Length: 216
Image (cartoon, rainbow, N blue to C red):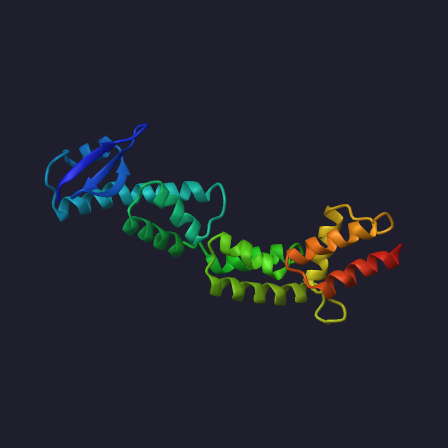
């Protein structure tokens, strides 16, 4: 394999193998392994470069990122890829994180869904979770489990437990400062339309708004 280098802004360089972009690294990384630009390298040398330089650095980078916030596997994959690590390094780093339970998409998804449940419609939760990088099947299962847990936390008896979407509508109305006694018919229609666009059913919207009006 022929090794070539491309200069970048900053201290990093792009390493090409047989004309194809392989990774981003530092010149000192290559010197530490005894690799020179424009020479042929074999699989043994490349493997040493991976094991002694790229993989340890990818692991350190991932741990640094996780120290600041929680990531889904897909979010971490995108981060490491953007940092210039090759696919095999990214996937091995993710496996390392999962084995240490630093990345647990199942528990993360369930907790995130439960957090969103009293704030968003089910459709909104689904979209937000997909945007975070959760797999579709996991999102569906997590929302279902979150709904079950929400029901248990707010009273096992259905008569005692308000559906989370009703709570989410109330939260939205509070955030928007909706005052039924001051709201014109036009204002009421706009609020209802906004809630409907967010994925709430008209029956739930009417129920909550009707209850707020009765309280006045």
